[in-house]
Amino acid sequence: MQDIFTLLLIGVLIASVISFVVMGLRQLCRTNSLTRKAHEMDLKFSSSDHFDVPRRYGDFFLVSGGHGPRASNVTYGHILGAPVRAFDFRCEVGHATRRVTRHYAVVALKLRSAIGNLVMHHVDDAQGRGLFDGMGDRTIESWSCRGDLNLAPLLAEACGVLADQIISVEVRQDIIMLSVPIEKRRQDYTALLACAEPVLKSIENCYT
Image (cartoon, rainbow, N blue to C red; front, top):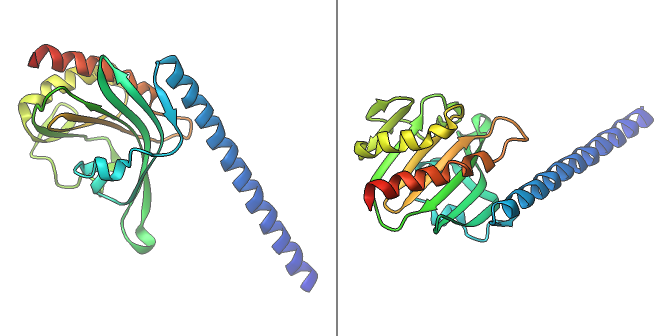
């Protein structure tokens, strides 16, 4: 009996080690991939969050709606002269045995001047439950919206390049945050970064 228990314990330990190794390799592959893509876009990359994303963007629904917000794998630099930060974001919603982890790909853009406040949460974003609950005053196209609704058509058109993804948008004065729930392990924020330029151009054309 003791021998069986020992073998089971060894098996559990080996499985745990293999699991940690696999997770480490996946993270390494993701880091290498994002580093390469950042370089291709003339941006910089850091696997850690030295911008303190939870504090810097604490006013945003996505960041403040859950527990233990955490960012990692940060790509940063400038697009069309605007400071940009893209990152993997995770937080938890719920309590005790009902607590679950949410994962998002996020891009935050800083504008030259403030344009207002608006939240556009995509109606198909199931992961947003517990983060964006009850915030929508009106539905516009694929988004539940609250705030300056005059901004909604402009941002909806600008995000058309990612029409096949579940993209949500939040504007807080001079910061725009684009987010997409991560459903697959290989999914990252590089496609979301492709939306940054048309969003910036659309806003520039309307507000300059």
